[in-house]
Image (cartoon, rainbow, N blue to C red):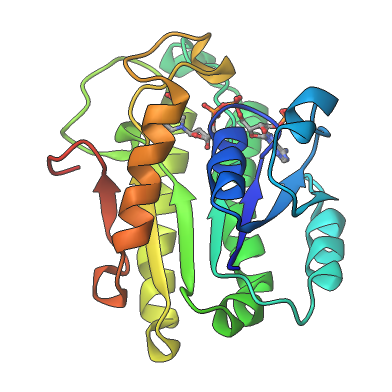
Length: 225
Ligand SMILES: NC(=O)c1ccc[n+]([C@@H]2O[C@H](COP(=O)([O-])OP(=O)(O)OC[C@H]3O[C@@H](n4cnc5c(N)ncnc54)[C@H](OP(=O)(O)O)[C@@H]3O)[C@@H](O)[C@H]2O)c1
């Protein structure tokens, strides 16, 4: 069966990706900073490997890549992300929080993607997914604040477009996806979508993805992102 790697698979959208791919019988590699709750782990499919990954500790990404050396990965979903200082006025946005947000949401996915290039090349689907947000869009999301988060997700989209160019030769499909406003810990369980619905929609996009779409930012609710 195919293999999916998910970062931040212990919570929210990442956990649901692990559940839904596990239910299909896929092998699931969960790259988690915080280990699964035992109950969640037990409910996943039969082939789950949990490895430690902290986006703020380069060594864990290197260790993860080392542990996975030679193992084909069909779909890598770089989902781990943070949202801090979402209500801070411009003058209150701190360099610390801005830097941390950019590291976790933007630099770490790029860094891990690069470390997993050979695994993706060896997989069949060769699909790299970044979990982005409507907040990444200029001109489509007129809500106040969220400065660092918006910058980090806009930059993530751009990095994925770069990767699509960089990896075109070997047939990679690099997508950024907008989940919708989903009821998870990040949104304080507020939102328009339940997590299973959002993830089912995103898996539909991943299933249908082709290399010709590489670099695109997609939305699963049947309208342009
Ligand atoms: N929920 C929404 O409406 C929504 C909308 C648009 C985009 N997104 C994106 O969807 C992704 C998942 O968010 P969620 O809604 O599922 O929120 P969540 O439940 O808070 O999940 C966030 C995940 O990211 C992990 N993470 C955070 N910092 C990390 C680090 N330094 N190293 C490794 N893992 C780290 C968390 O692990 P810990 O448990 O260890 O903190 C957790 O597994 C994020 O990228 C988010 O920006 C969500």
